Structure formats: C-alpha cells, structure tokens
Length: 279
Image 1: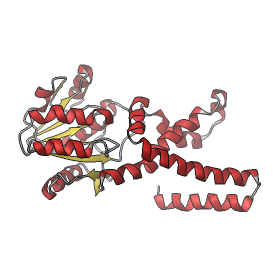
Image 2 (image 1 turned 180 degrees about the vertical axis):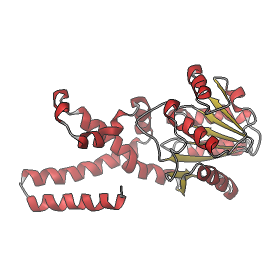
Image 3 (image 1 turned 90 degrees about the vertical axis):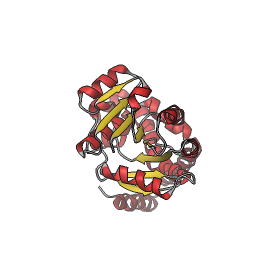
C-alpha cells in the first residue's frame, strides 16, 4: 500500500506502525492522536512519518486505517474517519470487544463504499504508550477477525492478509462468539487478578514470591481501559464470573470438609487444562 494510517498512538497503535515499518508494508505512515505530545513522541521514535491531532491531515490518502482507540470510542471514530476516505479503503481495529462495534461499524463503512473488518490482536502488555511499542508484538500471536454479513470475501481476505503481514496468526470468529470466548480467556483473568491483589494487605506484599507477581501482573494494566472493556462485555463476563464462582465453591467445600481426595481431583483437573495451554 502507499499510505497506512493509525488512529490512536498507544502501545498497540505504535506497535502496528513499528511492525508495518519493519516489514516495509507501506511507503508512508501517518498517525493521529488527540494528544500532541504523543504525536510528537511517535514521530521522534520513527514510528510514523507524520502525526497530529488533526484527523483530516493524519489520514491523508490512506488505503488502510487501523483504529487503536479505546472500546467506547471505536464506532464514533469510524464515523469521523469514513468521510475522509476514498471508496475501497479498509478500516480495521484492535478493540477487545466486538459485539457492540462490528455490526454498526461495518454497516456504516459499507454505506460509503468502504470496508470495516473488526480485529482483536491477542497481544499486549501491562505497559502502555507508544514508548513501549514493539515491532514483534504480533509475531506468532493470534489475531481474531470478526467479519459480518456486510463484508465480502475479498474484504475479509484483505484484512486477514494485513494482519498476517504483521506476523500474526489469524482466526475468524463471529463478534458474539469472540465476546463469549474472551470473557473467559481475557476479561475474567484481568478481573480476578485485580480482585486478588486488591484483597492482600499491603504489609504482606513483602513476603510474596514470584507466584503472586505472575498471577497479578495484568492487574497493573490501565484501569480506565479495562473498566470500559468489562462494561461493554458485562453480560458475557458475568456468566464467566458465575462459572468461576461455581468452581471456587467446589474448592472451598473441599477445604471445609478436609476432603483431600476431592481437592486433589479438582487441582488435577485444573493442571490438565493448564498443560494443554502450553508455556
């Protein structure tokens, strides 16, 4: 492509730019962020050729636009972006929830002769900001595509090819299936990590080992970002919490009854599933 534009120059947006530049996917890289200092930093780091808080200038003549804004603002950002793009342009995103985004955004894009194909790269860290952007962030990691009935096979293939070109492995899912799955595999772990670290008295942190750090690492992620994700996917997340509570009840009852055999069985079940996840 000639021009790639990234809207939202945080960790994911900066890493999209870094990965694309390292693979020479475009001749020109443009960025937008509402914070002028972030734009200046992204340029200074060499992530983009130009960036600024003016969306019209930031998009230029981009053929592909990647929206890396928080969940709550993706649809509104698509609405702002579409009038500035030529027909045939592709918009994709990095949002962690999809049911509330994909159908509306793809319908709006189709009405203007463009395509929105939702994506969720399962990559990131507890760090934030483009200062921590990495060109290898997506390498070998899964990116879920969430196309809708408004997308043609060619549009889906184009979006898939873009994410694969950043090093990602791509898997298509419906927006609804994505949100149900991610409630268990991503959103629940963040919620539990926060609950766990939040219930430990501060004076006991000094007698903790690496297990606590490993288990609660993701609790250091941005609260504002995750509050929006939790709320947007709250129904699926509440079902995941119920499933976890049910499992925890079994463990608790085994402890109360001093039932070592039952406790071992439950722990072994957990280990067996964890072993299938791999390292």
